[in-house]
Length: 208
Image 1 (cartoon, rainbow, N blue to C red):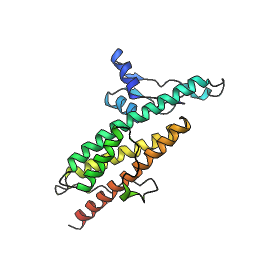
Image 2: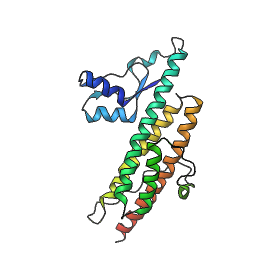
Image 3: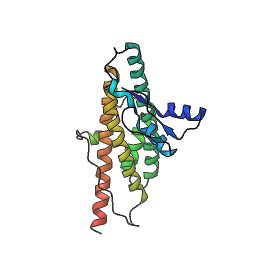
Image 4: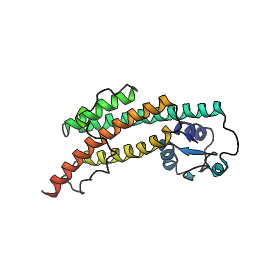
């Protein structure tokens, strides 16, 4: 199995616009590739390509498998760069409203954009060891700053990316797999921070 990336789709779309897309044999879409198709109103089917049922009928090509693993890792870093920028944007918007979240998001986003080793980042959230559930979204109210809805949106995107990374890790080399595990832990910690903040705001609104 291999993954079709957003960059591949954009390149193909720039060469010739298309309104439908058929996945290649034994392929899946990265989250950003899927979003690209949605944004451009391109019809496509989820899951594997139509011919995936024939997998295993021919001997695997080691060179092709290595190339696919490299492409998957490259797509993983593409996602990190995009999410890093979005984290920094949320951090900027949070200044003066939720300064702790602003610091966490900007620090993590900066490291993601630079593909830097995470080290001991987010030590205040180290206790988060499981994938958190969807956070409590504050009720619709003029008293709730739009920032908190931004947080919930980013959390949903991080959750979707977590699932993709878990699937993609099986296609990577041992080194790539270890890298994904490290970054995935940072997502768990960041989501825990966002969930704590959103639950606090939702409780404040409920109790006036």
